[in-house]
Amino acid sequence: MDSTIKALERRCPRLGGPVGFDYCLTAENDQHPCFKIIDCWWEQFDVYHYLEASLPVKQFHALLQAGPPKPKASSLVELIEAARQRTRTE
Ligand code: SF4
Image 1 (cartoon, rainbow, N blue to C red):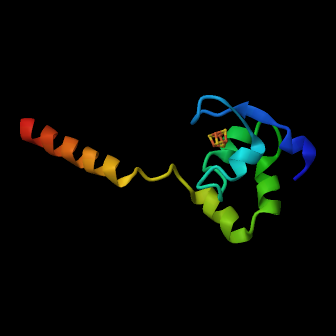
Image 2: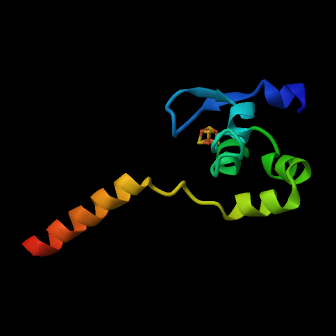
């Protein structure tokens, strides 16, 4: 990775503190770029073309279509239960 890019930092809206670009590249399960990486970095450098050139084609296209991580199963159960309770009281 280019040392200039590697040295870049910004405030992470997900974590609430500073992170380096290298963190964002492997933020999802310590393997994949964060789904917000283009949104977060486009103002500092041409992150789109950087990723296009450095990621495997399949991974780059997956990143373009990625959304937020799915909620954990426990969160889903809680959401379903909350929806059930709402429909009972209506
Ligand atoms: S790309 Fe993801 S991990 Fe990096 S700053 Fe943005 S939200 Fe945080």
